[in-house]
Length: 182
Image 1: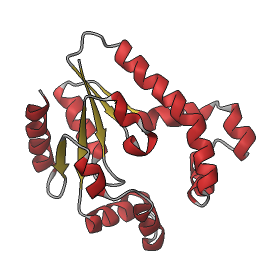
Image 2: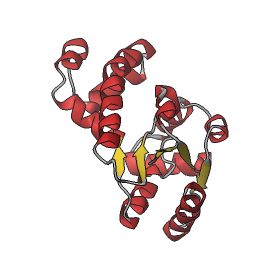
Image 3: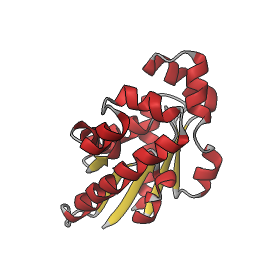
């Protein structure tokens, strides 16, 4: 079994690549979705932060690195367990994908055989983030600039999909990447 991480910075197109992989027939575990579910009934998070509402939590931890670390120290081990469960529950799969936005930051990169990085030009990611999330430009820039530079992550990846054109182009690039992985 080949364990493949799918990652990329915010608004790069990870979700679109994930949809393409799923439509082709691959199993993809989404750690964002997993983390959202883990937030729902987490009493420790409610006790520490006063809420488990994602938007409120985001505003709390985005402004305070110590609180972000606190939240990550709770969620990362739980998410890691779910990733390992996904691997164990699919023993007959020749290749499994896990979408992990914070792959390198969490240290989860060590769990995988291959890493696929979805990249997009900075200004394109900025415009996508504003359009998709309704952020004003200043806040969108803060979100983009809070992440580790793409170049650092690209050097650690086995395949890079540059998402700077049409969905058809993205699908073609995803299929080319698959050839490299298999």
